[in-house]
Image (tube, rainbow, N blue to C red; front, side, top):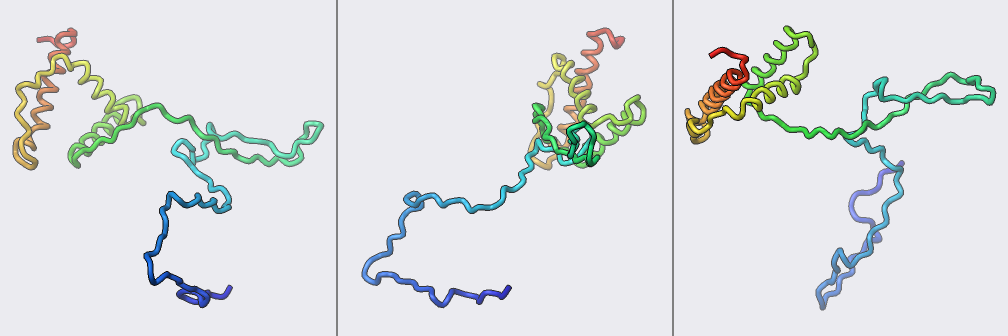
Length: 181
C-alpha cells in the first residue's frame, strides 16, 4: 500500500468570511456522532477470571451424533466469570521495616503452624481480632502526641502505640483468666 503524502490534501480549502467572525457552534448543538462499526472488543472485567483453573472451566463436547457417540472428542475450555467478591479490600501502607516484620511474622506462622500456606490476610486478621477483643482495656489518653513529620515524637508514636496495645492485650487476658496476675 502506497504511503499518503504528508500534510493537507491538494483539494483542501479554508473558506472563512473576511467581514464577520466565524460561528462554529457549540458541541451540544451537534448531533451525536454515530459509532464506528468495529468488532466488539473483548472486555475483561475484574470479575473475569483470566487463568483457566479446573474449577472455573466448563468443558463442552462438540460434534455429538444422534446415537450419542462422539464424532470428535474435542473438548474446548469455556471461560466463566467468577462471582464478584463482596469482600471490601483495603490498602495498607507500611514502612519498609513494618512490611519486613509482617512478612517475617507470616513466614513464622507458615513454618511453625500446621498451615504451611497461611496468607498474610489471615495472619493480619488474627492480629486485628486479638486487638479488637482487647479494645475495652486500651488506654490511649496517655499516649504522647505524634508531633511534626520526621520528628522524634513522630517516629516514636508507633512504639508508644504498640506498648499501649500490649498492655490492653495483657489486661484483657487477665480478665478472661488466661493470664495469672
